[in-house]
Figure 1: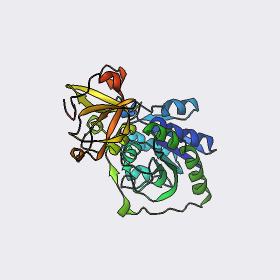
Figure 2 (figure 1 turned 120 degrees about the vertical axis):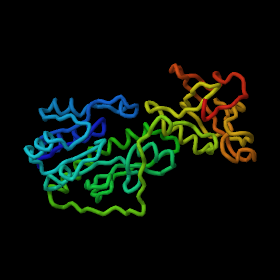
Figure 3 (figure 1 turned 90 degrees about the horizontal axis):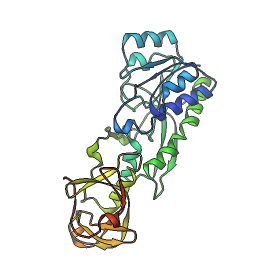
Figure 4 (figure 1 turned 180 degrees about the vertical axis):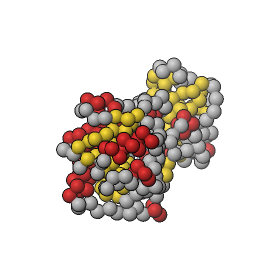
Length: 315
């Protein structure tokens, strides 16, 4: 088959590499220019560089649909478009152009976690597994019929970084298997159950702010979901932003006001957590390592040399 690829960052890079290795002819790669957005600078393997190394023509676009792109796509005459981490909507004149349409690779187990940053949201929400879906693109974002899915379990100590590496390794085999099914005429497309669908927005800095009325269990996942190199979960201490690098749920039960810097436990410092913490029946969040705005990382037991005071939502 003749294939055009739309993609960006490491997800698109892995998809393009799988296409190049598949034996199918990659006739064009379309990718976004580099971005300064915090989340788009993290996993930034270049689709353009990989394509150029293999003699594949490249077009850079923030958004699709201009006359030059449409003309180039028609001239490329693809049998299939494959997309992964394309950041804007593709119009029907593009996704319906090839005989086999457009295969989108999405990093969640659709129909849940359509949209943006699904691994982070899934870990925050305590999901037991995450994965990757190959589905047919249609006019509704991430809602087209599913061809294949692959999943991995979420362990009790996994970070978003761990899950990224585990799921990105699923992309190559998923793309290869999907193309084999399509090319052989054995593809079976399953409609998504819309009653189970959920959609998440692109993350912004405010989404990383800690709310101390959440339980310690929720906050511990919140910290793991924003592990390095992602922007960390943050709070404020004495008017300055403080990033929480690592944390755990306390063994003891602590009462008081959420956000109170309380007492040492193990190798960390307990912060009272949970809207019902005043009862004294809830565990606290044991903060182990923090990072100040100048980028310096500290052991929490060193940073909070005296107990007392509060960590707050706002400066």
